[in-house]
Amino acid sequence: MTLKDFVEHFYLKYIEEKRASTRKSYKEIWDNHISERVGHIRVREFRTVDASRMLKAIASEKKT
Image (cartoon, rainbow, N blue to C red):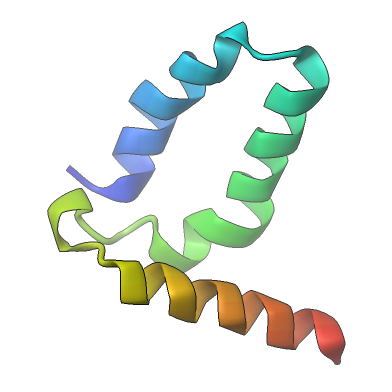
């Protein structure tokens, strides 16, 4: 299962119990910053270092 499948079929359903503004924010972050970068990776292959590199890349793009 890819991260995209996991997030869209399980995680986003799990956060339905959160406030509407929180749900909207989480969905926008996924759509705008994360999905294209790591959505294709299988859940079992996604490591902490992958998340760290992704976050550093996002931060460096925002600085410029």
